Image (tube, rainbow, N blue to C red; front, side, top):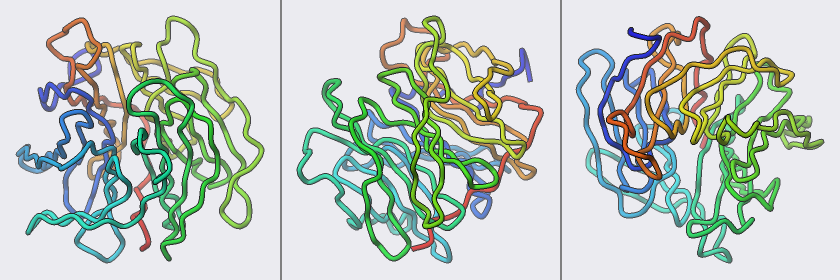
Length: 286
């Protein structure tokens, strides 16, 4: 590693997002929303592959006991097979909001998929937070976001973290006994020189990791929202992060060349040594 980071893939992603470590595949997946492309980097060989998608793609997650995946397209949630390549619609949460697209998702410990939406053209507060249960039941849990980002969960499952990048706010919700959320609180307000909060994840010690759009860094906060440390990166728009590697002791960080002054590293996939371990991702249970 040099300067606490390494560039793994000089992907020049327009809007790199949604890194997801999948141990069963021994690979890191991520997406380029604007280029409508899914990426994969094999851990053992470093081989990089990509697949073009029929629409903007916001995220990818594994499915329990299955070889296909769930992905978030502009139109809604879909099932994806890579070999042979096939896409099948699963859920359309916003037929009444055709200007929106899906943006960022995570699966909780019970196998329920949480994902957000946002205005795909401007900055209308038309985004919402949804949950897709393993039985296919779809529910809306919050609304009125400008840019939804970063569902993440505390290690004990008591809290869900989510943010509105457009407002510079990171929220913490209490988790209810039925798996729902309540008592939304502002946990962190991003300061002017921080940029905007983007994708998030948590580590095994309860630290909250947040990517800084327009802030050239990724930061770790304690469970009460206090900044612990930041890692500077040579790209302006840092978009998301995920723990991975065999020991879950590496942090993979995506970035975007969109709306950037033109650093050679804009849109690259980075790796840092975070000094802590992450939590294994739970596959979607349906």
